[in-house]
Image (cartoon, rainbow, N blue to C red; front, side, top):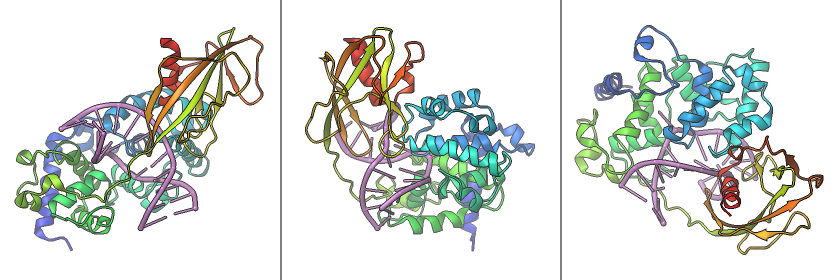
Length: 351
DNA sequence: AATGCGGGGAG
DNA sequence: CTCCCAGCATT
């Protein structure tokens, strides 16, 4: 049951949000919102998928490009897979892009192009988990759902001075967040907590002095805000090594592989090469006059560091190995490549 | 409950 | 360097 403290907190947050809400491309302006205009579910969904484990700054341009190229969910559903993967290239977590397309096609084929408006129905769609289902239901459909993301976890841990480390504390944090979720304007409230976490209640050196919740915050009283939430220690990242091979034909075409859908960089284009192991092992995809490119590629993935040596060769214009894609000189866009592969191309350009 | 999965910005 | 980000799918 909501007590008066809860009401005070959610009211203070909404009031703060009305004055300080960030102007984000997937939001409707305050004037429209006051007139009862809801944001487009397609825009909300697209932004929420992009924002999974990704900062607003990184998402902004991608969101505009996707919307310009595919203005509706029908347009996106009809897009060729490789176009969508290419447009997603550089944003990371490529399973999101594969699930984005799957989801768009389900929405078009099974829901007549309209996103379902309940948490449970949204949760069944590809790429939509508990957080995103709650966010879309609250923001686009005005449902009183409680969103739980990294921001909300941090704000709740501090507001209630919870010292139990994540992820064990998740149920308690969720309970606290649910108790604060108001019946009115749940979508604005959800975005208010996340805005607060992104701009005031930040991971390091939070701006407690200007926080709208400073009176209620128990961690501020204890002086523990900057140390919360506590997290269980994480494993160190090993370093792996490998080789990549940049083959260019005399006609300017490049030889690339499409990586399998499962696993690292799944579904993306990349240079053929060796496995990535503890020790480097050369593995040219075919016989050629390979020359080493100066320098090396250094890149860090979620769970390991990678050091790549790159090799280049020039081949006859009619050369075409069976298992590689030939990408013509004028179709080849480095921006279609994931970042590590883009870095390897950078070595070739800089040679 | 643990693990795999990108990339960039802040400190 | 380390940490974190509007997490999800899989095992």
